[in-house]
Length: 185
Length: 137
Image (spheres, rainbow over the protein chains, first blue to last red):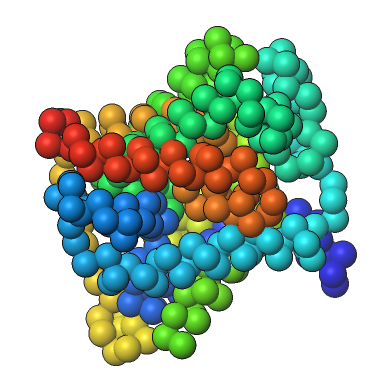
């Protein structure tokens, strides 16, 4: 049994569990939207004194911060107890495309070229992570949600704004993948 | 203890993000290059079950754990906001390989460089709040 759990989980098991988490949160009287936490953290840190957008009762969002802490814990449990230690099994065509950018084939979950501490302390490596994070944080709030709020919750409710946002996610993602990454690496 | 259930839900979410490999930069690259069904299968399954479940909740007016009706609020109608905001998000997603949830799952997994990505995501949200009145919505 534990061997099965330690292998990567199939798409249909994973997708089913994500839907289950969304419904679980609905049954708990809340809704699934992770990036709202970024706004809550700005507010809890006192951002409301300077920017009106952060002046709201952030304590009503504590449940979501607890969910965030759970997500960190889940990552820890997965790495310590539920991993078979094998690298991510991506397709051969992705491996060869990434090789052209100078990124070696997976030896773990994340590429050392981006996420090693050595890369973090290089100027280019730091800027990639910083700018990437900045755009995710800015864009998710501008669009009113991220993958969980729009692609999962919003599309499940057949909301047109969420479909437009998801199209935007792909416009940006394709632009980065095909146009900008070759210039960066 | 009213928060314990959210801790458990978050923990399951973190484990699923890690075990599905959806929190890996490689998987996000594979998705944007259309070279595997994996990520589309995950999101497609979640949305298919989500659409059915939400429709059933609405049809049978199912109530939540506390006995309150489960409500769905339509998002404000706009195109520029979702398209521009979504595009900026997508640029960051493909660069850092992580949306906000997977960022913190990576931190728990041991990828401490993701702390930097997450801190800058908070900064990005702050920046949006500071200039939002000047942006098209």
